[in-house]
Picture 1 (spheres, rainbow, N blue to C red):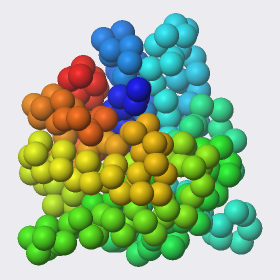
Picture 2: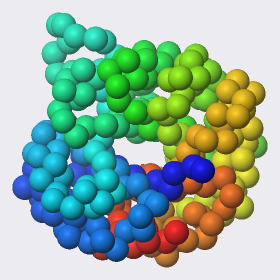
Picture 3: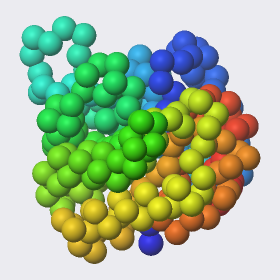
Length: 258
Ligand code: PGA
């Protein structure tokens, strides 16, 4: 059984006090989150330690189990003279940090992150015991030209196919069409299901049965009003949520959409 996952991607939003308040508001509603849904919040680096402390302070073990924490990026180098970078080992050294998002289209587009670089990051993250949320997705031109399957296949093959099955067990895939991110435009449930099924089939070429156990999340203007129909699709195992994860009520409403 694949785990149902609702992951928030805060991006470069909230100051530390604002982030802590948001976490407090989410935690106050954890009882409403179905027991089989895993929430993950991915925050800026500066927020990780205080947010981890806050989550580690949750008294009820059932509620604590419903929410996990991750970063939005990590370095492609192990350690050393790389001013401004944050290594996977540094992230893993914070008790409570379990995940890292890699390959988000904003990192690919604005910071020139290539598949080769992302493979280095993924290897380091996994070697340090982090789980990876690996993003893929096509631009509008690619979709219009009918190239979306090729673009996504390339992003999957050149990074994830280089991992071992053992490593792949700690990877969640997030399909995020670039044209739907932060635009208010969402892929239809049919478009999303079609490409999620394609991603699973592609993963099966290399990893066989394991592809059935891999969670594949949809991201791109996912909100309370459309989460239910998206999550009802056979190959959609949850969502990676940007804007709507910054409001506790919306984030929890999405988690309750299962
Ligand atoms: P959005 O962002 O929900 O604001 O469209 C999703 C993402 O980029 O992960």
